[in-house]
Length: 139
Image (tube, rainbow, N blue to C red; front, side, top):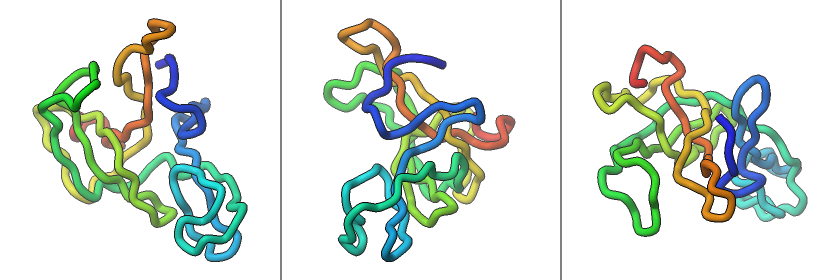
């Protein structure tokens, strides 16, 4: 899938898949997403830019059945929290089969998801999302 990113610097697509772009603190070793100029946990300056794991575990989820103001993408869509191996929980869109409910603790993987159309270029507007790692479960 190609398109215009919702915001530069949040994620990247590589041959291996989609990865979120975060930081690791040089002082307390905490990871964070998205990247910031300081550690959001201890306040230390200049965290190290890192690629976060492309897989995680579903921690919580729900369906969004009414579009938020200004959103022109497809509805319904999944929305939830995925816990990454680095120890942080990411609030994220979920790409799910509407007929198969995912389960808390289910392995997930980062993917690209079309969320609308870029008004300037007319191309797809894409963001990161997570989907079940096992395509036969929940997708």
